[in-house]
Length: 168
Image (tube, rainbow, N blue to C red):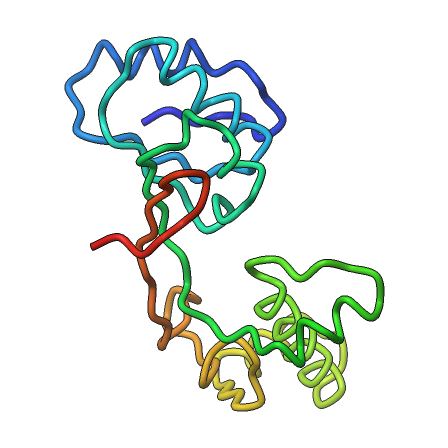
């Protein structure tokens, strides 16, 4: 169990520690910058165990490196309607893999703050009982006792030939 600094571009020390242990896979939920560097270093060190990243691996920056071939990543099965993507592009931004979640989050907080004000305890109380059905990303936003979404489906993707496909 080794952590990395997201701005790092050299994780050979952590990888060497991992190599000294017996393991089946490397869980590597990092941002693309360190993801690219880390995937290259994993291959340089001859590590052949399965690499599993997080949803941020849904990125051309990751897909473009040959070392990403065969890497798995989890991805929330979310809505991202074309109409929403067009609205994002209209303001000069490119919609990413989590843009719809971010949009929902802003709308949820705006709605809660409008109803209860800016008091943190009041906001927390409101979020605890929240059922938000005006979501773009998922059918309904509700949180469980550890603040995870109660309802969300995840898919596993595999990177092959510079693109992602469903892992089967």
